[in-house]
Image (cartoon, rainbow, N blue to C red):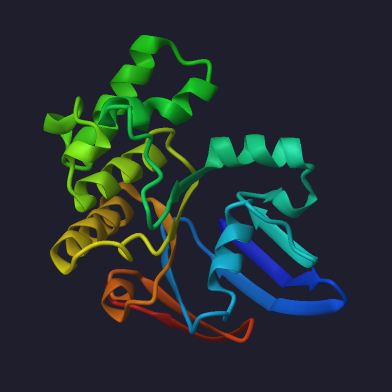
Amino acid sequence: MGALIEIRQLSKIYVRGKQKIEVLHDINLDISGGDFFALMGPSGSGKTTLLNLVGGLDVPSSGTVSVAGQRIDRLAAGKLARWRAAHVGFVFQFYNLMPMLSAQRNVELPLLLTRLSAVERHKRTAVALELVGLADRVKHKPGELSGGQQQRVAIARAIVSDPTVLVCDEPTGDLDRASAEEVLNLLQRLNREHGKTIVMVTHDPRAAEHATHLLHLDKGSLVESVSSAA
């Protein structure tokens, strides 16, 4: 059985005027279902670009990206958007919550794109918020929550549609150490107990310790991949 995510000879080039900048060069990578990958490297190494390619937010200049047997690099923009909605949960550094909506409504947003009934949407939202430990904060708006709680709402929103993969871009970058540890422990629990496949970009070695695999990028190339005992 093949890997859940298969990346082959992947390169990404951005063109700025007459200048071509190769951000990723000839990346080959397999990520199995249930893996928790941390991507590390200096600024400009290509970490976020690789994350965006895995999540279908960008398309490669050359090479292939397959997720669960689907060649997402071949999908047209509209089909790629629908694929993202169905298969990817996104967690960003700055939460991206709607400030006027309650935690419950923020988490429910991805489900509004589905054919689920209101009753089923509310049921799934309640389960997601309970899973992240915020069952008692469903009516609170983002401004009434701490940074760590806001990020947990964002994680609940990311998992509410039961995505194939979670992609996390510096999920603890805006949090204090205690809140960051809560969020990282939650991601680790989602991976260990619920089998979620997670790909996370981080600059923090302590955050990377929560992953099962550590991937180092430098100047657009994969320089090291290490299995962790996390």
